[in-house]
Image 1 (cartoon, rainbow, N blue to C red):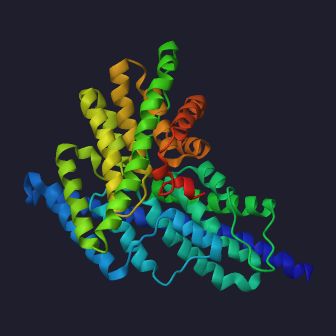
Image 2 (image 1 turned 90 degrees about the vertical axis):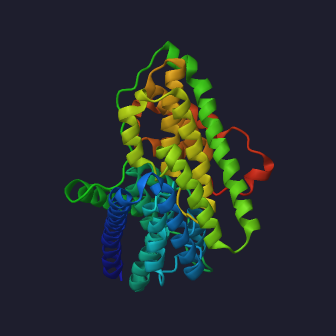
Image 3 (image 1 turned 180 degrees about the vertical axis):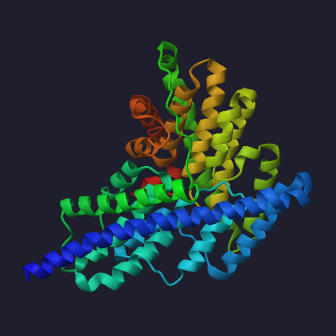
Length: 418
């Protein structure tokens, strides 16, 4: 009996590592396909459409997304819904992985101001559940593959293993009748192995085959008396941007609900507004990781008003997209918004630009997530460890700006994920 248990345990940990690697590879593949689609639609087709191509393409995208939703349903489901089902049921349905994959890609390739994480979480959950179901005869431990795979995927998407690990330890799957939950040590080992497999696989493929998805990495951050004097004021402005996202998120959700089951009309309206914003403020389109790199190269050529307007419009258009059929995540767009607002404020008050970007972005993400620790861990993907004090102070300020009571109950943000 002991030999059987040992074999099962070894097989389990090997399966965890493979599951993490598969999650990382799948994340890379979806992002690779996304980049191919964006290149085709936005680098080649616009030659034939003239200056109005953002509106034309986004409206066409709205029609496609709306018809797809009408035919197949509201996919992908948001992250907190997926995680709630995984923790309640011990898994996630996998009979429609192809549908979920297409649904995750459509808003991204048509220029939606959404991130890929929400769409990929459901797909990865389905894949990991399928693997777990095929191997559950080896023991109950294999039921833990689904949640481990999800956080491994999040680590790969954000290239932030600490974020995925902390999230994985923040909750657990509900136990069934007579079922014993795995020990904390087992959960730590499972999630660490899965995240390592996903992270290393994603990095390997990104560096040796084709680049994945990543935000800029800042290293030279300046500290001084003026910077710390302005820390709280700029963090308050960033926190307001996060607060605004929460308010608009709930407001657009209620507007969409009042419009009823009209997926094509809602997606077309969102596409039209997205396209119009794209003509006036091009950086307000797409998830924001490529745009952040471009902004780093040219922010000093832009005006304060343009940088601030770009950031706040990005916040608004992201909330519009995720609630009007262009379903996806909001992490990448709000991080970009924080970068843009940070650069604008640094020009306005005359402090180190990276310090200001760090503070404002942390406050924006803290304000949208409402969980300062998770915000800091996530933003280590952009900022060095020695910026932890700035990140922590700003994230706390953003997270604790009070929301209206009417908003708290309807949030779609990451505070409900972990």
